[in-house]
Length: 218
Length: 299
Image 1 (cartoon, helix red, strand yellow):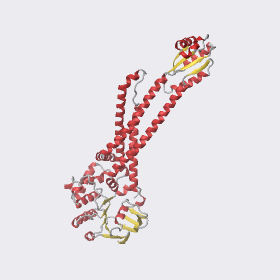
Image 2: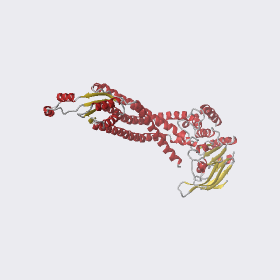
Image 3: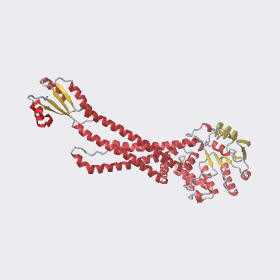
Image 4: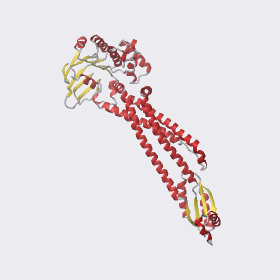
């Protein structure tokens, strides 16, 4: 499903953020991507998403050679994925419902389908009672649930989560992890970047450990 | 289709959330297009004035004193076979002398003491109005010059060429003004759109992250630029119309005597102004969105 071969990524031209990294993730797998700050977790997720370029190596996602994509066709890759960010990246001037439906509007679904799928996604994350609220009036856990609903609403094959529990209390973080596990059980491949030992212990999934841009253990 | 509908909605919400910048941009376009339109209005009316003067332009064919009747008939045939000739008046030597005597100025009065008539007979030829009237007069005069029995031709060559040069100069001036104003507008609108883009930077980045095509991102901004152009040009046309109405109501009676009418800008040029303004709005938005997406993709 996801294959990364000998990828090197540098920001300043001298110190590699990713240093000849290789890894493989199978379809339907749930993987924790861990390591200290600056290990390259976010960078590798951004590369898988086609948001960052890389110097050498090859990245294949569902058979798509990510390095060959241009800004004109990278959307084809992104539409098969969902991304959840640590800072949620919600639009403050849109309601919960609008934030989730926005992900379908940008890919051109019709309004009827958008309404139906948004409602389903909000039901899955338990946010239907707050569908008309604005993100600023919700807790961190609720905001992250909106982000998860937005990531899952287009039924992506892969969901990338970059420290999705980083800003949340431990109890809420476990709840969020459970939501990802439910999505995994429904067939989505999950790559969950975290440095929380509690989350990894609670999850009991494969762990890819990064340090200074290298895979330490997998 | 869905992309367009969504684009319209986003455009409206962009405009509403950046009302002040939008209105400022529309006001700038209105001023620039008004300036261009007023120059165009001036050009049209000058053109009309000069055209009415050049309608008075006629060709005078002076005849040799010993012209034969067959040569005269040949000339009259040439006049009558020419579709552009409106009227021909024959002026005999005697009539010319009598007219001269009655209209002579003081400094030419000594000529009245001549014991012979020095003036030649002539034909005064008037031409119908047409787009190529002046060039036709010039060509026709060249033909007449070669005819036997013709002493000389007078048709205001200098006036015609000056008029033509003036019109060419006016057109170049209009194009230059139009070009400079368009360039200025592109810079202003592109900056306005850039402000609009940066105010929505997070949203645009998110759109791209969740799979929006570059076209989906661009459409609302392109529409915004085009709407600015359209609104600005329509307002400018109202201003130009108002100026025209004021001038006409104030000065029409003064120019009636010249057989002239205050003209408004011809319809194709009106649509041209609107089209130019919309195109400028589109280009400015295109430049801004292109630059923004280019910088984003360079990461």
